[in-house]
Length: 218
Image (cartoon, rainbow, N blue to C red; front, top):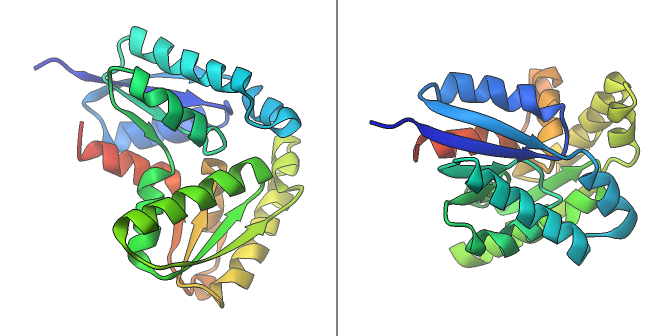
């Protein structure tokens, strides 16, 4: 049987090793390759998700298909709307990384907390959760938190500051919601740093949930 190939599209090179480790552990019989454009998030932050940026996203999906991907995973939530718009033109399945996470959150609790370090990610993730809840016929109450400055700290080498800001937001939200969603894949690293006593509710991160979802398919 021919081995399947998964194409991963990233907007941060820091996520390549994260997903490489997950794929090695959970998709050992699947070949993978990466496409990275770390200017996309900067451009979205400055201009918004413009038609020109959406065309770039569509071009990366087409490139991944041309490179032989049997399935495409886009690991950035900020470009989620552009991914959904372009996916119908691609002839292989396309998954935005936060979809399995959104579905898990909707099934886990009514009061859902969302934490992000970028405004460009917070809105698309919240919108996706609301839409998936509506499709599932489950009423929800969404509470969003933006950890302003955390992403810039991480990109500037201040991982400790980034993690501390996320932990503070997690502790605050845990007392008010049934489940917490980390809107960016880059935030998953913080879960292991949170003391067990502060994990009052489930905390969902997209990388492992997305790869688990793909493992059930590929």
